[in-house]
Image (tube, rainbow, N blue to C red; front, side, top):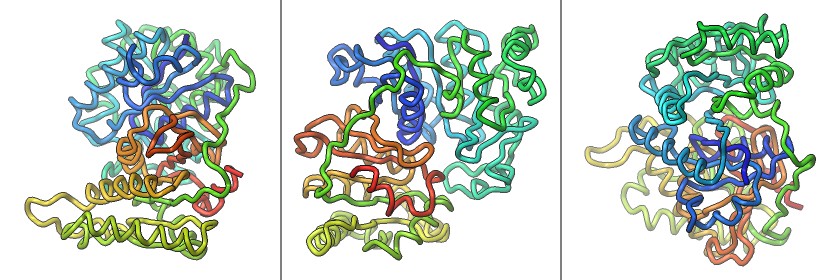
Length: 428
């Protein structure tokens, strides 16, 4: 019976948190949407063997009402599965539009649980995300001075978490500084118990892993916590050295990189991979004209690469610069970002039908589209590639595979420059 239920607002975030939970001793299952957990759902049997269940949603950039409804449905499914403590996981760069969705979802989850308050902890120092005086830093830059300032879906124009969150929530937004955190678990717990914080969303500073361990210990009795995956550092699961899933694929199986993210980190990864892997860039004009033909051309390219050099996975990517997304959208047609998601999802299903058994997908929205298109219901966490990035195995039968396929779902901002070429070594 699971001890912890988590709701992740995108698919890369779900595997990010699940990786951290496995490392902390939780036997962890990732369920693709709440329906997978229902009594007649495909994951129902696996849930009974898990210590933690993470429900992966595609709600980060959804309309507020839709994101709230999906999150509430996930909470209901987790409670039905037996979970009693809950974790709302969002990105460590607090990706959100001015109207949501972090505040509205946190409010709704608290209301449904009959709880009054929770904490807001997006810090994840292992990936360069820290919070000081309620301001979120990305490595050495304030959030609004980092590349996230010009994110095409969630441009972050303020680094102060209180100012970002206040318009999104019905509750007061409070803050607790690093000095209180450094006084230790007891001091932080006593501070949070004060009336000032009783009905609030409280942003807590953290600049190192020990701060996160202190926060986690001080909030152990809260039924709901919210934050990035780093907050899980302080959790202690019941099974030391919880087993990771073995790979579904073999070293001789072919694979591909599908990169839809426009983040600066992914663009650097694409530039590096182009020096080492065969590659093809999506043609937005061709996708608008004849999407089926454009996808067929990309799949044909990948298959030709497998035949000539099966050991080098082809790279299919979308963005060299942000200018690629700033093309004018013809009236009545989908924007470029939507075309990219759909094209890469269609590529993924066609490549798996053609024999691919390992896919590395870059970008939260792209990952959600790919996993949904593949009709994956569960992900078992495998070998970690980088902080926040892991290989995961789908259930058997995906795309006609006997043992499932291996997926690495990479947040656009995560991973080293060589991840598209080095990740495959972890499947050996």
